[in-house]
Length: 150
Image (cartoon, rainbow, N blue to C red):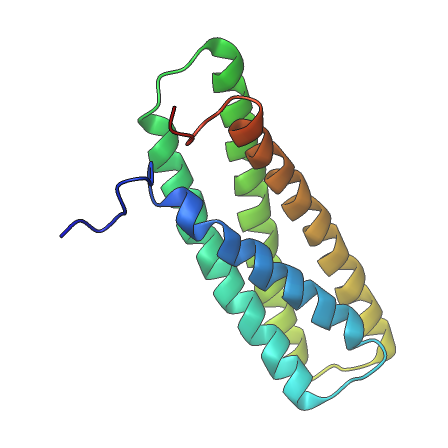
């Protein structure tokens, strides 16, 4: 029995949607916490950041592995490199944001409006980086046909 379905070019397309969904939801809950600050909400948000960042790590590593096994023209190689760079920026940004969120909310126990505003602004910034990474990934599929069986 094979681990991947026959139609899947690699694991990257199968795992990439987890960090997009989980980190987007974490960002949304961070913004919701501006208006509705509850402990359960902080715990849920922290969990989403942790799982989302770990899934971003899995996605980044699987993407690097997939990129190493593809031989393409120079234009597509540049696009892959750009997507990979943005994937790394996303991973680092959310890694740092996840640690900061956890430390501020659970270790220092700072729930002031100023802290929640700052975390929300940082989270929205991370979402914009995530969206840019997804944009470049989408281009790889729809412009260059990567991962699409002919």
